[in-house]
Length: 261
Length: 261
DNA sequence: ATAGCTATTGCGCGAAACGCGCAATAGTGC
DNA sequence: GCACTATTGCGCGTTTCGCGCAATAGCTAT
Image (cartoon, rainbow over the protein chains, first blue to last red):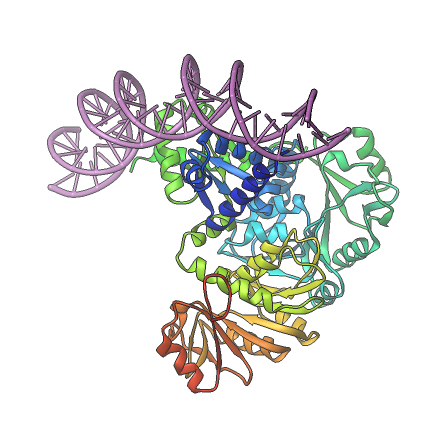
């Protein structure tokens, strides 16, 4: 692959990221190449998700947006949205709720954006992102060290902040769940935090779309406590949900409309 | 303004926001109207910044992105970037720095995204956003209550977290600054937080682009402490900067390349 | 209720942008 | 040095876009 082409593409990316918006003609003039070439560059940069094409040009797309767009095309997106709708419906006026980090809790936050007289506390950047402009919702962040993978905050600062608060409800996400081991996460710092979060709330919900049921991708566990509810979508295998119910865990299966079955 | 038109536009927005990407033909079929009408809708939604048009359709654009795009087209963007470049250059390896909330400190964060062995602590969502995928930077958030206007965290949680930390440098933003009163903010909660932040760092920088110099839009003040440096851009009125220098405040004027003059 | 006014809609047209195939060319690697 | 691959420019047909115009639908005030 010739050098000038890559350099130009990098430059296009830089230009788009600083000015936010660029046009094909502008770029073709700037680099002294044909519009066709620019178009091809844009097509390639778009395919790798580094840029969004517009009519006659391209616009910058930040990492957050990029991830968000990719996620929306995933099939699990519909499931997460349904779970989010259901979860949001559980929350009454003037409550204080805690939202874990993750895209599923982000879906809950999305449904809460229009609500009023609500206090939402979170450890996740996704949630903050969704509620950044929700003017009628009081949004609080626990703080801590940002964990890139989950876009969530962990660490002593997070735990210390938690010690001072209690919640009406907490909505937890998970990398995986099994009836036997409960919530599975990549490291014990995560599971410890989730257990701590659960201990501070009256109602505990574990939100996981069907694909995560019965999965144990990692080996740090947090078992289900008494009264915890497992919320999943209609794609869930009945045998899987039965495993949980057999152990006395309440399982709520949400259909596409966000209603419990 | 007829109702159906507005309803349809709201629906278009919802569809775009949930699926992330929609096409003109798809929308025209869905609503049973001509492509022209859809195009007009998209044009209007784009003009209000609620949507981004693509070739043959439209894509969702979240609030964050929207604000970011608007900001990038502002003239002050160049100044902020220059200040950001300079500020980033002051930070050495393995340092711990504190970044205030605001777009100017966001510009600093943007320049730090590629750095390594750095610890960035912040009270601002903008900064978090910029560094959300900076894999080599340790990012921490102080937490607190989200203040929509500045997209920053304030309150007792923020202050409590600060008590436990110290920093090599802190970079503060401001709604306005005057030589006489120092930093001006909308409320005293903000100024108190900034003073607290300043007290925890060895080096204090106040970053304000030229238009904010001599401005006092609000009446909560935080005077300059000893050793604080004022950093502004080359559009600054020499008379203004002289006011600060007369009071013994070091003023750094940064040109477009991010170098001090 | 009705008349008047404004916003909206559909349609047709010219202009702009896009994608694709082809041949020439410039870099790259052996 | 030579073969090979990626890249580029150009021309083509296709799609999309924007705008003006006339008809229509909805809102408002009397």
